[in-house]
Length: 382
Image 1: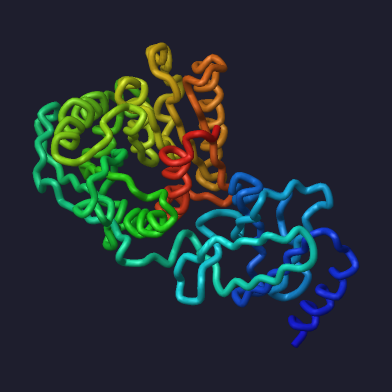
Image 2: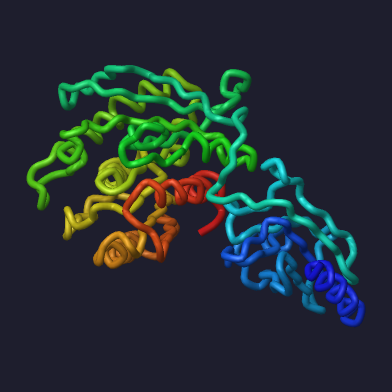
């Protein structure tokens, strides 16, 4: 076979280039139209999944090669994995299971490796890791709005067997988060959390709050905006003053601000921004996807008081194919947040732009695990 010929030729070639260590990878799952590069990630680069210094060279169909530089500082053991550029696209075995870390102790010669399959968009998932979904109430009272609403809790798969306390993320638009019958599709957060749990980045409580259907825009609209007068401030007070205390009393949460987040997309992203503005002492993590910043072209950050609150983490996401102004507005907003932080560690911000991203659940679903990992589990990164 041509693949085996290329593999053998490369091995012969590598005998000439010692003493450098050469990694030669063969993958069975290498389609003609799959142009994603392959990277080596590990304890030598802080497990950075898309480090171009460690991108492998494609030398044939399903054959990749990487040569460590002659002056590379080897750790005592080289511990590594292969990815297509993200943990959502990491190597898996032929059954879809997570693979163990690879270990290499030699510093020269040729190390031959094999990958059967790759994850795509964090899937497939294993059912035993699915979060436990609980309907907290069909009619949870919202006294601030004189209404009721459905609210769910997604608990870690082993919540009932553990004694741990968990961080909490409050998410809007529950109908589109894990409902298979959602009109516009869903984020599949249950499936994504199942896969993430295998990588120790999914142990979190999600509180999903149903939107108000025809009243959604009014409830997520904060103040006097281009959409008129909204009830967003009352809705935010409901989550903060009524729902959060209830959740902290019912479940084993980590109630402090550094373990509490709020997030959403579109108008849900906008109301999440204002939640952080109104209550920085409560929400230390904001997950803002494709926010409807056009609703408040001159958003007021003057009363965002961070004097006593360090390390507010803000994950911003937008797609270039959403609208003509989405990326421009979110970039401007990012710069204003940085200025508000005044160069200190009061705001730690990450902006993710998807060149192909559209304004829909498919792209928000893809971004969700990356945001969760960065907000809650990689808190030493900037």
